[in-house]
Length: 281
Image (cartoon, rainbow, N blue to C red; front, side, top):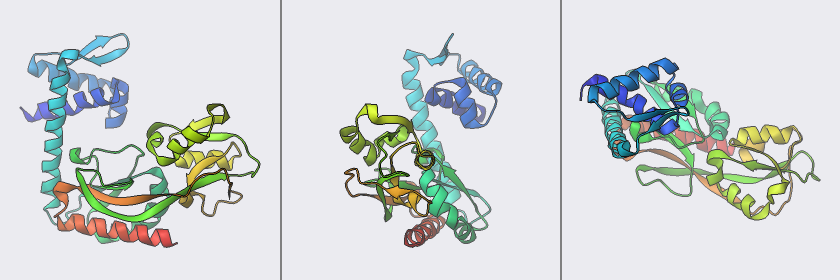
């Protein structure tokens, strides 16, 4: 396949995974017309349409699902090749992407980014805040800091600290609840709320613990929050609503293919050090 076709493939996959041309354009940082042009170029090069054009937008043709799956595998393999080539070089001013949840990006990682950058120079560190799990195999990130009960099968790393949760409000008599949405529905607090909090008590939801903290701070209800987010917030108080002790390991992770890279080992070590220092603060 010609190099240009591989570049166009990125746009095809973006539309498939985001569900629309507009969303794909936003995720890739380009305009709407560029996405349409690159999809048309890919289809023309292969003499076959990938999408059906409908009034609702672009929809993957049912008979092209196997093509997209093969494309995902190819893109993942290319990403790993790029990772390995970059990891094997000494630091040359590359951008190293460190992804984590908004909670950790806004607290311990933001506080420690200076130390991480100093250790990793001349490489530059880019902090990518996302509550969704990015695909490490396709070069969406080099290193991940994630709350998880266990290490994902395609990753390697260590559980460095634990993050605790509790219920918080501005008023101890508060009865309204704030719920979890988006990627946060997979978190332990969401399971507890599903069992213990009636839907009618939930007045609003958010897909971000940072957003939930601000909603609580504005007096809008009770929310389950990470302890680290509630630390030092004036007026914010723990409220007893029967929430059990809940602690989740925080992992520093890289793709298994990169585990032997000295640069990646240094990256993981300094991030782990920053997390431990932040947990003690």
